[in-house]
Amino acid sequence: MRFAFVLVNDRTPFRQAWCMQCCEPISGSYLREIATRLPYCDHQCYALFCEMLAKDRMRAAS
Image 1 (cartoon, rainbow, N blue to C red):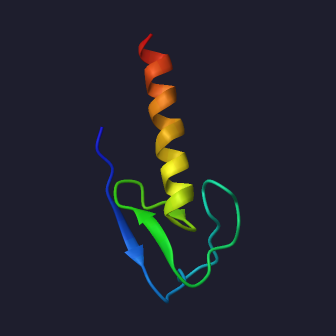
Image 2 (cartoon, helix red, strand yellow; image 1 turned 60 degrees about the horizontal axis):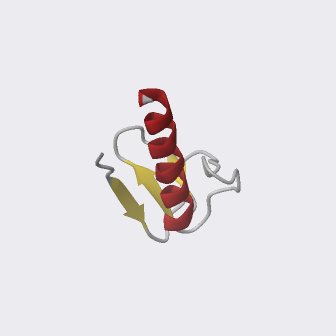
């Protein structure tokens, strides 16, 4: 499984956005996943999302 993201520094999204993992408002710097364009407040929230997604896929394959 391969994930790709863009790190955005010192810039907020055009519209108000919230982290897809922890639901905190995005401000300053954030990550955006390339495939889905979903925002995450930092690399830790993105890593948690990827971990949960991998577990869900393994469960579905069982």
